[in-house]
Length: 188
Image (cartoon, rainbow, N blue to C red; front, side, top):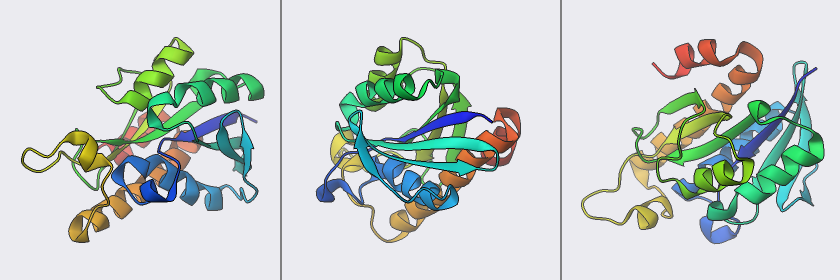
């Protein structure tokens, strides 16, 4: 029986709940149902819930430290539960991917994403899984931070909701089918 830490990145607080930057939190909320995780508690600087998917134990986490400091809670949770980074799945928004699409990978850089940068720095490795929810680039000259901290409207909202659902499916696939099969099914 494997044990996984699934960390959805986002920002705590009602004002951020529906923003693009909270793609990770929203995906983890979907996964809570899939993994029968019902009881949330504050632990290691994150909201966590334990569950299971098929033969795997799962710890779901929503770091409460704000996006740019996600690394500390993630590191503490890995240490607390004795989970190696190669069983960490981080779910996050990605501006370099078209809205409504999902990409899965293992390892790599942070591409300027401060939440990923924080995790890379705290773990001392980049070797963990990423489920990236495409939100696209901001229109015109809009600031990236303003864009990801805004709530998508109309068609963009539909694309965002679709990506979150796909991200949850991709996360479950990673645990049950492995990276290669998941990439075939979701990265195409």
